[in-house]
Length: 533
Image (cartoon, rainbow, N blue to C red; front, side, top):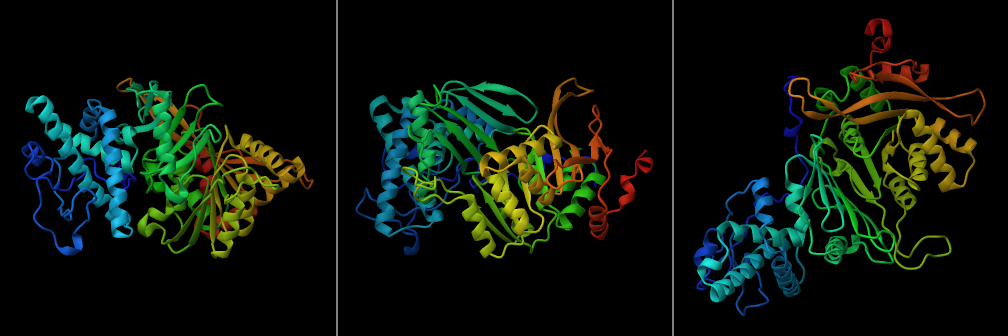
C-alpha cells in the first residue's frame, strides 16, 4: 500500500445534500425578480407529468417544477456568503416555507422524506422570489439580492429546515472537528490540524440561540427531544453524522452547546496504519482478536478518536454477521456502510417525559437495557454498546455476556485507569461492591485499547500537527489468586513515549488468548521483544 495515502480522501458521512443544493423552479414567471432568479434555478418550469404535480397551498392551480442546478459553491465560499445574510429574514422565510410544507403534506395525505425535501425546494424558490420582488419594489433593482446571495439564502432556508441551520456553513468547512458555543456570541471552532479559531455569532441573542437548539431537538418527530428549563440537558445525534450536547439555565448561566463531527465513518484499520495511528503488527493483533470473538473496550479522552477506531475494528467483521448497536446518541452508523455490514440494527435510547415513576423511569422511556433485551430477540451475534458514560455499564456487561466479541468506548486516561473507572461506574450505577465490579470486568472484558490525540511540531515546517495514536493495547488478566481481586491491564503493545510507535509491551498474553489469536491467523512471534528489536 502506498505511503502517500491521504485520510482526507476517505468518504465523509453526510445526509446526501450537496454543498450547493439544487433549488427547483418557482412558479412565478412575470415578477420583477424573474431575471434574477433565473441564475438560481428560479425560472418557471414546463408542465411536469401528473405524477410529479405538487399541490401548493398558496395558489389555486397545482405547482409544477423541475430540478435545475444552482451554480456550485465550495464550502469556504458558502460560509463567507452566509455571513452576509440577514438571518432574521432567513428565519421568517423558513417559517413561511414550513407553513407551506405543512399545507402541502395535508393536501397530499403524507409524503416521504424525499418528496418532502423536493416540495420544500419548490417552496423555497417561491418565497425567495417573492422576497426579491418586494426588495425591488421598495428599494429598486440595485437594492435586491444578487445571484450569489439568492443562492446563499435558498441554501440557508433549506439548512434551517432540514440540516443545522446557521451552524451548517461552519460544519461544512473542511477539517472542522468540533464547534464549541458558549453563549450565542462566543463561538470557537477546532480544526483537524490543531487550530482553534473564534467565529461569528450563531444567533442574535442567547434566547434566539436556545430557540434554534429547541427547533433542532424537536423536529425529529417521534425521536424529538425536549430542551427547556425543566429539561436543560440535551444529548442527541444530528443530521450529517454530528453529535450535539447542550445545556442552559438554570444549570448553566448561559446556553452552551458542543457539536462533534464524525468526518471519517467508513474507515479501515489499514487506513489507520497508513496514518501511523498504529502499526501493522498491532492492527494484525486486533484483527485476530475481533475475528476470535474477543470483547474490546476502546478508551481515551474526548476527541481522541475512540469512535473512529471502533468503526475500523467493526469493519474487520464478516459483512454477514448480525450486529445490533445500542447507543444513547447514534454515532457508530454501522448500518450506513453499505456492503461492509449487511445485517445491522441500530437501536437508540429514548428519554421519557414527565414526572418519574416509582421505578425511577419516566413515561415513554426506552432504556438501554430495554434495547439490549430487544437485541437478544433480534438474534444478534454481536452487540455493541457505544459510549459508556454511566448507566451504560450494565448494558455493556450484559452485552458481553450474551453476544460474541462486543465493542464499546469509555472515557479514561489509560488502560489501568479504565479498569478503575469501570469499577466505579459499576458500583455507582448498580449499587454493587468493588469485588463484584472487578469480577465482572475480569470475566467479560478481554482487551483495552488506549488512543490519544497528540500535538507535535512538524520537523520540516515547524507547524503544529495532530496525530491520533494508539498508545497501549492491554489484556485484562486476573490479579491476585482470589475471586473478585482487582484485575490488571497487561500491556501486550505499548508506544514509545516520544515517537509513539507501538512495540511489544511488558505483558504477555494468556495462553487462552494466544491460542485464539493463532487460530485466527495471528503470528505470535511478533510479540517477542528480541525479534522486534
